[in-house]
Length: 321
Figure 1 (cartoon, helix red, strand yellow):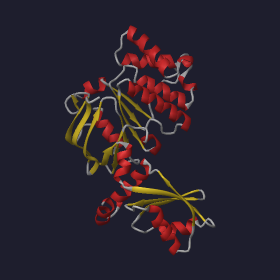
Figure 2 (tube, rainbow, N blue to C red):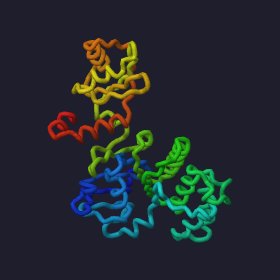
Figure 3 (tube, helix red, strand yellow):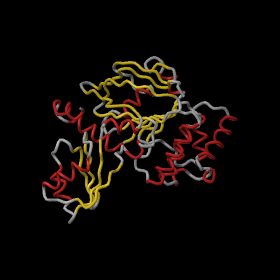
Figure 4 (cartoon, helix red, strand yellow):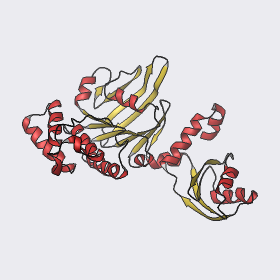
């Protein structure tokens, strides 16, 4: 598990005057599910394309499965699996024929193809659909076939670039069960996503924003670093809008969010968040019927981090403190 599968130092990619990825240094080890979390346009896909040997970096260095991303991109491509939300299945072929096609592309022998197809059909729950035309499958089943196709050659490293975009919640959960099975067998998985619940399922995370890494760690470490305390408030008379306005703008408040008739409040650097919030609202004539302390999530940490980075430099420095 200590084997380094991906290592980069000061990786950067420019498109003319646009710096899409800047100064990315990270290490990913064998068997990890490593999530790269960021909004659209943050540089996630560009980073993956450099690691896959599809794009040359403008500066910096990196190795993937032991090969240099600048000098040996073709060797990298032979040793990885790559799946995106637009993974190309041949819709007029059956599930089994699609798997056979991709096995052939990866250079597997006839015997290897036969054995691997049987294995991935069983692991993916696709055995009963092996003769079904791919174009007649639902989105969730197509996703299973795409994942099976991208892992048919049993690569040591699997890249998943926004793989669950547009997929229903049930299929997304089933997909992640498959990812954890693949990881348990020793395959390293690097996945980009902007779904915060998916980030919670990763072993480690990197936050990326405007092409730059904002932090790397386990989900719990990323949350703890922001020092957030989160409350859910039930208010007498349901004055949630007035309460939100009374809280917003205070430096101790990181975020205020409406959840139906409940007000969710995230404070930062406040030892006794409930006492502080109650006192602040009491000053504005608002009584708190009940307050519940809840776990701060990766989403809370990510939004807090990104907002701090989006501030003016002086304000951002204070927000990070």
